Image (tube, rainbow, N blue to C red; front, top):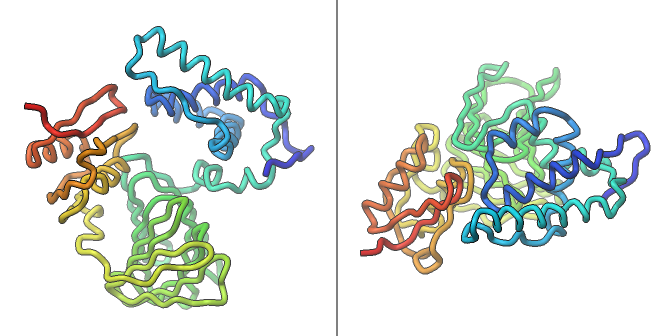
Length: 321
């Protein structure tokens, strides 16, 4: 819920209008990601307006598809859509306030995280205790080491952690709960739906956010998907779970849709799959440093084709003869 707070400045209408424009451009697949990043980085007010839009996304409706329209008509459709988004924002009077909940939303925290990676980027961090942290594509995290605790806050994305001997507890926090390392190497992946922890050495303990009195132990070779209110049963960890550390993705009898969902994490824009072949099983090893090359390899080995409508919008379908 949005709350009115007199100690927070009102978001100016011009900034809301710019945010509405970017929202529509992103939804229609015509946004320039680099330009959007520059706009967001230019001002804290820009980031506030964008975080507000992310929270209101479900109220904004669908943006009409414009890619098949003539250029001038498509631009007009996007302008009208942006005007509707701005009208919704301004309906709260240009007096929409980004309340406390907004400042602590996942989107806001991700934009302001101390450690961030863009799509396709990975990052290695040496921790102060001698351990290590690897960030995968599109991730955001903060590190907090004090005299009594070692804490990693993962806002979104995926990390791999190797802990070092230290008397202080080592915790990883996500919006869904807390993971406590028990002298271990483990991976954590977090999105809006759930958090998944995969244990490669030793074990971890998991406490869900809304059920912190219940502790789940996850042993080496296992993974656990959990939510704020509970957790699934632990399962055997799939092979090659950490192949992203070497810049590789290994798929063995994966539905095509699953493979494309994974590859899309490493490129900007929209990567779609023809529903008629979404369940087709595929196997292969794909490099993550150039997803367009990976798509070409996929298409060559499985009689598929990829169509690029724009640089940031691609669809995989059956190859036409």
